[in-house]
Image 1 (cartoon, rainbow, N blue to C red):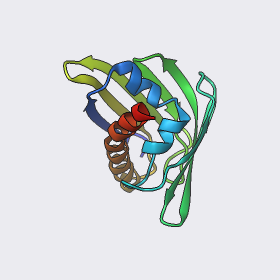
Image 2: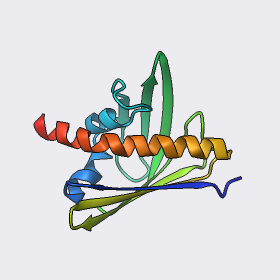
Image 3: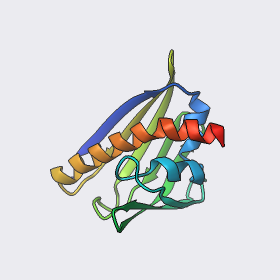
Image 4: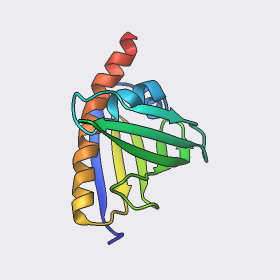
Length: 145
């Protein structure tokens, strides 16, 4: 069932450049790439160039959940696309982030394609929704640091 996809949008009261760069900064990524709200920070390593790779180790309870991928497109401040390998997705799964200026700040639309099942897709939809919800506090925290 490779035609399954997730689309999640959210508006952030922050400039597009700041929202975009948060997805490439390992310190900020660690704050919002979490499987559940208020969890411990992830461990993030990345090479944020097209063709570069990343690894994000999320933590939930006593488990570590590894995520890896390769940056396919980095169009500064408008589009970011990367492969997404996790225990719950297909190897050729791709996440695309589109960033757009809106009156209140930045609209971010996340599209994730290719899942092994509807259950996996639904789990990712919930996960990405939580991650986007955690992004705004992470942006605020990074400003204070």
